[in-house]
Structures are given as C-alpha cells and as structure tokens.
Image (cartoon, rainbow, N blue to C red; front, side, top):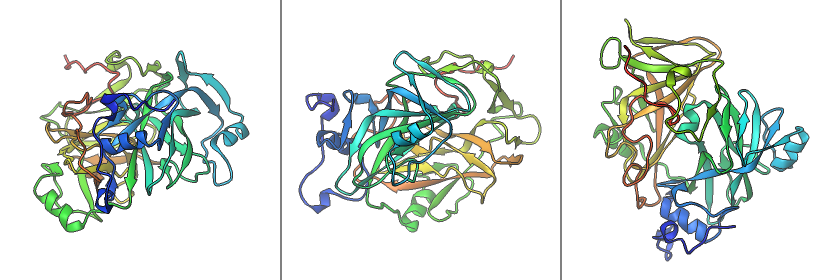
Length: 386
C-alpha cells in the first residue's frame, strides 16, 4: 500500500511547482521526497513512516523474506534480481519474527519500498551509520543493473538489499532499516573556488590539519592521540562473539565484542588486514544546511585500506554540535601503519536542490549528532578503565 496523503506529519510542506527555476539540480531534500511520495514515484508495501524521512534521504525497510545465496552478484541488463536469486539456489528465510544472518554469508532481501522515477531523478544508496559500525556490508540492487547502490534514471521496479555480515552474526527483522536512499537531480558539482572558500572559513571541517583540497575533495585526518597518554583512540572487533540483535538498543557490553585501543607511546596504529576497526577523525565535520557530503570509501593514494561504509552525511550534521566522523576501517591485503594526523579520507560535498526544512540533529532523533568516538547504538557506553 502506498503512503497515505492524509498523514499530515508526513506530507506537510512542499515545493514550488511552476517554472524551470523550481527544479534546480542537487540532492533532493525531505520536502521533495514527500512530493515524490505524493506523486507515487516512491511506493511501499506498507505505509511510509514519518521518521523514515531524513533531511536528505529515505530510510529503506526490510521486507519479510531474506534469500540466502551462494555468492554476491549483479543481475546485469538481461535479468531481474529474483531471476539471479533462483539461479544461485537461494532459499527463503522468514524475517517476520526475527532471523539470524550468519557472518560471512550473503543474503538478498526485497525492500518494502519501490520506485517509479521520473523528472530526471536518479537514486544513490548507502548503508546507515549503525549498519557500517557493525561491519554489515549492505548494498542496494535493482533489476537489470550492473552497479550496486545506484538507481538509474526513469527506473521503475522493486528495490533489494544485499546483506553480508562481515564481523558479527546479526538478528534482523522485517521493517528494520539497514540502508538509506537519496535522490539527485542533475549533476550538482561545486566549484573548486567556492569549496576552498568554505573550507578556509571553517565551514566544512573544524581544526582541519590540511588546508589544501584535492580534486574538489576535503581531506580529514585520523586521531590516534586522544586527550593524553592512555586515552581511548579506537576499537578493534573481537572474533567469535555472540550474535547481535539489531533491535536491542543500548543493550550490549562493548567489552564482549570489542577490544578498546589506547594510546601508549607513539600515536600510531598497525592495521591488521584480518581485523575491523572503529576510529575517529581528528577534525570535527560540519555539513552546512545547503550541502550534503559523503566519504570516499577507498582511495589507494592514501593507503591500502577502506574507510566508512556508511558514507552519507545529511545537511546539518555537526552544524549545531561539534561532531567528529567515526570511521569504519578495514585494511586491504597487507598490514598498514597509520600515524596520528595522517590523511585517512576525503569528503565529497554536493549542493542541495533546496535547503531542507529540517536539519540533522535539529528537532530530530539523530543518534550521532555531537559524537566523538562512538560505537553503534546497540552498545552501552564504555565504562572508564579501572
């Protein structure tokens, strides 16, 4: 059933309709996503809930069935997702009452939302922050597609999530939200000069260690120093732990799943390619109300590691409360030494088509506004040592 237009909390507000100036390029804000719901460009098996709508993205909900498949895949131009699932001998798992997704296995779940895109709009997906911090590789797939996490122009059809828990086995249920979808009209490229001005004025990152931009990307560096010697600088995931129920918020003792990392002597850290780390940037990240950003996940120019599965930052992140970027880090192939202040990633900023009517952290239940080094919301705060 598609979302009801009678829900005033969901469909209040809107966009101007007349004239070409009403359709600027950029990432679409929450009020434009409501407009897409009204126009049935977004449909849903169950009514869309108001808190699915973020300032510049839509949370996507799991359907009632997961299919375990032998391998990750893309359907390609001649097949649907379900045709590939059948070819890979997928068998169904009922999520309605909760089910375990085992570490290292690949699952495909049809999402409750589907799309009938028009008006030159494309979609782009990311895992949600909590998903990334649990090392759950979650990617969007569409029928006849050769790319993950991309919904092409004028796509009409269902949406699927490919889910692979990489560190912890997890319990998931129908309706839970592991990834989010944003919509873009045109190509909202920011000019290098404008971006440099914002960066120099401290509008994008605070206390940045590297003023220079690279190819319209803003650098961020790693904090391995903390406040003093003995300070907490990160977490390394333990192996062979219990499973994590995604519905249990603030439930788990972090020491059952994570090894805290403290600074002892030199502020360095050797990444083991078999391990998964939670670290944080030295800078506070700021996303102005008229911009959105994402982290470049993998850049061999700064090292053989991947950062930030959940790479999307909504407008307003860090704007009214100092917030560092928490990074999900995994080394590739070989051990790699990180040093304090080393560039670890790059932020790509894009214009919003309109400023959203509400910002991340402002009057919203935003879990990670004002964050420092922080685990996923399923964990209790770490007790001080001693």
